[in-house]
Image 1 (cartoon, rainbow, N blue to C red):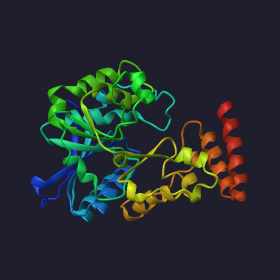
Image 2 (cartoon, one colour; image 1 turned 180 degrees about the horizontal axis):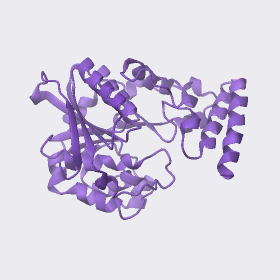
Image 3 (tube, rainbow, N blue to C red; image 1 turned 135 degrees about the vertical axis):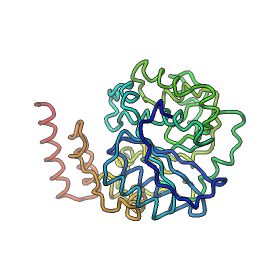
Image 4 (spheres, one colour; image 1 turned 90 degrees about the vertical axis):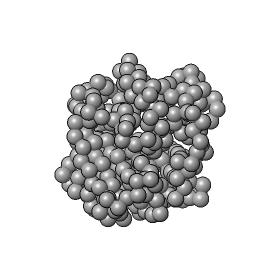
Length: 337
């Protein structure tokens, strides 16, 4: 582990039953720790009969978020381990996100974590931090026969464009992936992932890398375990976003893909975003502010445009005027600075 990690902070639950522990991996930069906290809370609220241990890989963490992680450990009587990745390891990766402005270099942390966890855990469920768990069925990952494969994923439909582009047997979204850590490290896949990631900036970054490295080494389970929901597409396609609901009986892991996230102000009218908000309100991050378009660092004007369109569809005319004025301001500022 010392190869990848320079510091570990542990908040331990001494009463945990070692034989029944299910290990969960989450990763993010210092700005994402609060969202890691909400995803973690969604697991704990919906799976109260399970024993979990969390492994969180970060570049750094604020004292405030560290305190809230400790509070979460105490509130739910759960062990939480925070691993700080070596700066030199992070520097290997390009900071160019290839137009994916909502993604940071932390996208590569997961395959570093799979290497660092060797001889600490045998199997781990990795989850993106834009995920909300809706029921108690995630224990399926520990029940599926891996059939001598390395990982369990949720495969995309046959013929997906990524299969053709990457020349892989089965493409998958890397936001949910269950990994046999021993098999992963027997094949030294962390080193292979790092090498592949450093070749160039792949269009889908770490996801492309994992699809190529794990080709023919995966077992796929059904869509409910990585139910992809694009809030951007929802607000673009719906006549009235506030009317669009999902059937929660068909979803275990709700994954908010794309640039619009459930913590953004412009999607709060959407019931599917409110599911995340309900968990936030019960978490140790219940008082954090939602993110407005002005908090987006790149091409801020585009997000005010999103907000204006949503306001228009919801007949919120004062908000429409306000957001269009801000859209024009930020657009002019973008092109003349």
